[in-house]
Image (cartoon, rainbow over all chains, first blue to last red; front, side, top):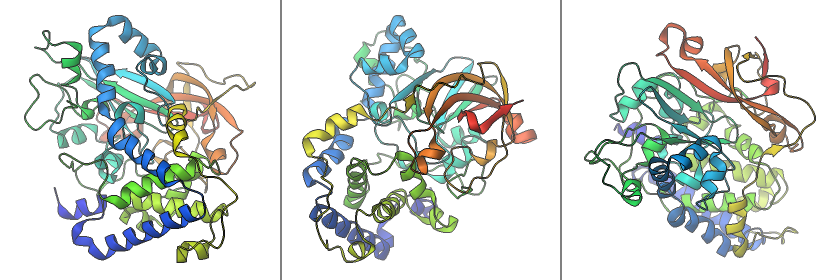
Length: 217
Length: 216
């Protein structure tokens, strides 16, 4: 990965003056907002802790694994994703209106937000830097095969790619294909082989997982 | 607005670079910007679309050089001053000239607020103009304010594949009016329709409100 690309994604150690200026600006803003009574410091901690430790792609992986083992649940998920996902207790902010998209031998779904960073928080947590970055937002819609290649993903010829640009408050969850050789795995075991990237639609799954692939387990 | 945020189809950004074992936040300041933005959003003084507009409404060069949470910080500071929650002077000095008359969202209400979210569907009297299967063209318009009609789709013809009911209209909500809702559709465009001979096959789907569309 090119260093100059990376520095656009987040303020870096080699960027000391800018970073320390930002840190000071944020500290000053935090103390101002607390002093004015606009922010409860304990609430601030709860917001951060929720998305650091409680909500993440493990949620989505549980939904996917259930869809793989329970055809009735899968039908429900594809018909009314919001209700089906809520049955796990996953709901709320940035997941108010959910749609599930099933990948098959013929169709591969991939999700982007070209205008900002819309992402299904209750099932996947906060989006990774690459999802919010210019290269992904610019190219996912016009060069999806090139973007998939950046992730080391190749699809068979003849597979149709459908890219979903999240331009309103609908949030999309991709149900990846269940890999071959997983017949012996329990629902819990299956959830452990799902990756966040597969639920965005930039990876396909294999079993055992390819080296270097970050599963939710 | 035709801003730098509307980057669908742009060239020159290079490959997608993926950080292995990426943490949820890079440094304490990112956590704080995230938490402060959600906490201040909980005061109910602006809509999510006003938040998006405050982040994207910048000179393109500055937008592209900013990191993600720098954009959030810029948006938050802008809205706090614009809505009169803090003064520009307070922001500069970091010292409060007096307490706010608003009350902070207390910690014990955060979980419930997040879980409830904020549904965007509304009941409206106007019947839907389009049905699944209809061919529609995205209008050619260049509003200076916030819009969720990306440049790359304007003037192009697609097929309605879903009707989501009526949703709060982002363009109006970004201008502060949360009461206007329009029918929202998912529209599929073929890659060839959008990119001509450079299309790779397949389709791009967007959620588009009624005012963005005309019959084709």
